[in-house]
Length: 191
Image: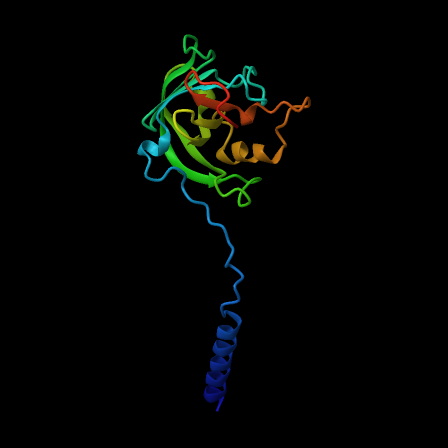
């Protein structure tokens, strides 16, 4: 009899479980992060970009490299000047570590997704750019723009992403970590 009772309890539990797991539309409007620039060679991480002097987000802050040269999603060079004559770190090799949604703007802005890169090799200066995240090049025509954040080996992808929460804002409301970069030489490419 105990065996029949146990079997009946199991059947009742299974039935209640099925009723409780019915389609209640709770996940119907869930926004899922998608890798940006799918179908674009190197996810668009290729070419040279210069800081936009017309962007309101601290274009002259020394923490924002003036020029960033991206090579086929595997190598990045950073220059303090927009002309690319004063290197901060050249030929830094990276591995692509996937993408992550922005903790503040996603899912309200589904395109708010960051690509993540970790340093694998490089010469002098590359360690300052150990972790790099970027909103990949986007926009219309030749006037594409992107956003970039970086940190040394003591940093992490999580810390860079969390800058969107406002904790890393400067006291004077200057936030260099939302710097805008345009296709090299273009100004006013958008933010």
